[in-house]
Image (cartoon, rainbow, N blue to C red; front, side):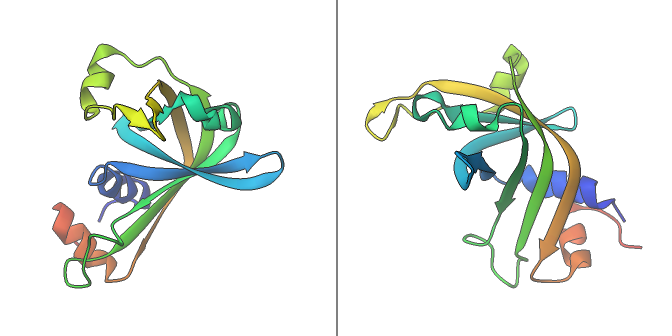
Length: 143
């Protein structure tokens, strides 16, 4: 059986987008981001024009993703959450190749990518089906 962190990363790799949670002007805040997993860290791509990335840099953030809108009870529904420090990132060309093409526009303005990296300190997985079913679907052996 994999560790919870291994399972969380395996599930995260099955989605393209998630939500980063932080505080902005002392209020809770969520922003959508594209993610890839690189060397045990989460690399995010966000639109810089909205300025949301500035609230994340240098802070402990939560990052979550799920398949609740696409998965069925039969296939298994899950959510993952990571907590860790968020820092600006300068992705390598190989890192950039992992991302799908960026959108052309966000809210009618040209897309201006910024990159952040989360170093997870904790990872959590929650399923609406059995955990062993999620492990089997990912090819992990059950214990």
